[in-house]
Amino acid sequence: MFLVIWSCTEWFDPSIDPPENVMAVEGLITNGPGPYYIKLFMTSAYGNTSGYEPVSNAQVMVIDQDNETTFFKEDKSGIYLSPKGFKGITGYTYKLIINTSDGETYQSEPQTIISGIVVDSVEVAYVEVIRPIQDASGGVTYTPVTGVKFYADIQNYSQEAPRMRFETQVHVQYVLEEKDPWPDPDDPNLMNCFRKVKLDNSINVTIPLIDMPENATFRHELEFMPSQFRFYEGSEDWFLRSIDRRAIVLHQYTLNPDSYRFYYSLHEQMSAEGHIFDPIATQLQGNMKCVSNPDRIVLGHFEASSYQGKVFLLNPEPITENRLWLHRRPDLDYLLEIPDSSHCVMFLKPEGWIYY
Image (cartoon, rainbow, N blue to C red):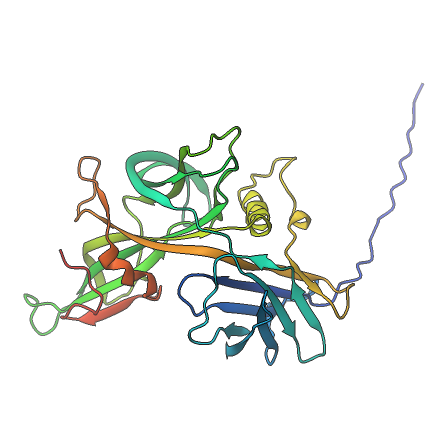
């Protein structure tokens, strides 16, 4: 006796109605030093490989609770900067309004700059962590890596956990030496350089704690700096002779509840590991809307936050387990304003160089 089972399979080819390009907004104002920026661009529709397109010739303005209007001027294509002297005020509420050249009007939800939370200190520890290392062929192996981990000690002044986000950079001074010195091999050319390095692209936010007592201090992990890391773009004509000094540049933002929800959701998505209950991208909602066409989709977030910037100096090289300390240095706060791109000077020390 034979049992025959017939299977009928039909190909299902769903028709996709690709949406139009979507407006995306990225904006920030604080009570710290400006200028501040608003970035406008259009995302690509499904199946379009042209990439992002900046939105130019828009009227961009920020209006405060007293109806004072500040216009942002387009500096580069799609990037609008605040005028000189404009600064957010703690306790004030701001609203972003954008009028584009195609007649659409976009508006943010009102955003209030709340009082900043003080980071009491930044501490360091020499640790070993397991990190994924990608080889030249694209394979990934999990390897123990030694280095320095930075922590922020934060005091909580209410029964709610502090709502903060951090951006941490390492300011590195280093000396490059010419690979093939000519005409005198015993007297090579030296290049003194410095640059800022962002160690991690993740969104670093404080995580809510359960039953956190008022006036308690908790320790929040900032960044991990490997003992060996590549911090300058390679060149055929130069090699790294020595590292001169490293400093930690800490940007801290105290968030209102609206901004905290946005960045916490973004943090959850970027740290997802493929589990079934990981958040999906559609759960990320910004605070922008199109008032001229409510059905139009808008992405992005307009942030108004308290800001504090601090610089901490690491001990001179070498940095090892038995040779590690970190000091707050207000006299180095000028490093907060130095651009992220590298800066090099032949023979002399660049302006802004950290001396012992």
